[in-house]
Length: 119
Image 1 (tube, rainbow, N blue to C red):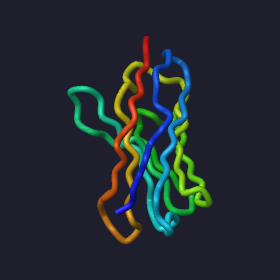
Image 2: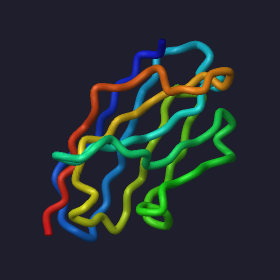
Image 3: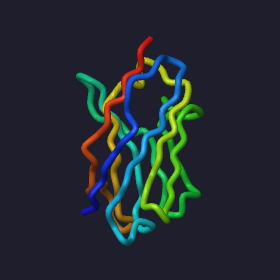
């Protein structure tokens, strides 16, 4: 289990930007695939994107591709989600998650941070 703490959420106007951060407590951060998920009110949690341990390989949901960027800093045990051109439909609680490279499931989750986009 990895302890994850998100920060950086808030209220932003449509078209604006936000940067979320997630701090991880593990000595082997590079061994973890990191991901962002989100859950809007009344909807199921959905995958936003992920980054491998090296930081060189990323993947995104179609709904955010071209607008969101995931990056990580292994020296700081941190992963980031840069969100640009935000839309009202991006309003959700955003969660950071960690999956050890030898496992199939994301077993560690943060508490979430609220992002609200006003139109």
